[in-house]
Image (tube, rainbow over all chains, first blue to last red; front, side, top):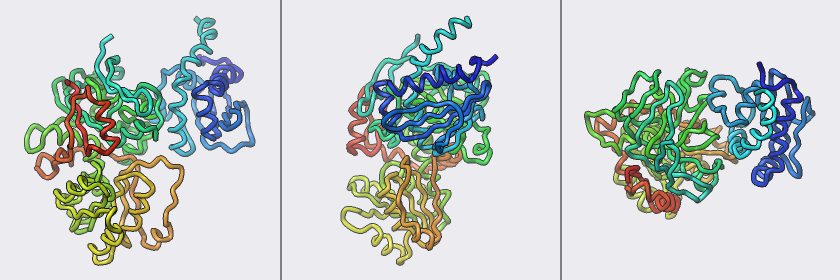
Length: 134
Length: 351
């Protein structure tokens, strides 16, 4: 059974951590400075998420967009959940084909380390859902 | 919780030796090794000076030899007590690029000591390290023939990297120019001699490094005193070098390499580039029909060859070690290496 019930939950929790990232004192400025349009296609439940990392404000939206993606990632929503909990090795996931990526590799590599300080924030975000499922 | 001493990068320019959690086997293909020797590599300077941004508190290091102390249930080729060297790059062995003998371009490339970005592998500048996919990543150290542990240590990175850079571009009798007489450049120059170069030229500005290049039979070209392109032309009957190795990884070095290469020649780039784009004299490269080889090194493809050549007494990269230090002095070692006060530093994790 998938962790997220529907698209709205993917948006609430994974979209939520990106929105929180925008406000993070260390990661926020770095994400905005990256100048990258990230598109993530989550499946089961399906959710197309756009993260526009740019000044003056990072935007996180759901659904199709007229923007052009610099990087597109595709993964199951459960994989996204495990990644943000710090329990999923992205390199291994890419090797297994569980995560697919399009776009310049050097830009992807620059984004990855920015996410680690946000793992505790994500675990806090999903704590209520974890408790409800326990 | 078992702990160990390790070299930890807190943030750029802040390296400390600290007590951290000892890594444990988490996959049946893993091996736990006690590190006997480890080295600081030029690539370690990328996170050190912030060119590659890592998360905080990463255990550094990807060049090491050690002794196997625990093996996962799926490991067949090494056993407890074996001494081995690990490739700095860990590949999956199964993806399309691995099957096409391009493990450096494995979809799941992991590199020790480079944080979450490269697969969260704790580094080898530590008392212990876990090596994933051990049957693929490790090579047992030969016990016969020439070569010391210090020679074999470099098979996991700089020796295989320098060797591959030349090996995939050279024909016997070619002239080879190496831009940058750092450890990888010197290993490339040493490899060029073994792989049949008619003449090896090494370009740098640091006198001590040029002296080392001369000691292994290369022609040293001091870029601070003469125009390298002109010097290489003079040494190659105005042709340029058949093979040029960019062992620096800086746009100025790549431009220099472009000016040295002969028509019909090749530029091979073991240097690391992360730039979004670089301006190159592309018309000149096109008209000269220059082939460019580059990318993360395919270390495991060349570990057996370089180990055999070390055992045969034909490669001896330990000669490039300028400093041997206790791991407890890693903070100072990193400073020295960054300031180019050392060519190559080996650390002893037991001290």
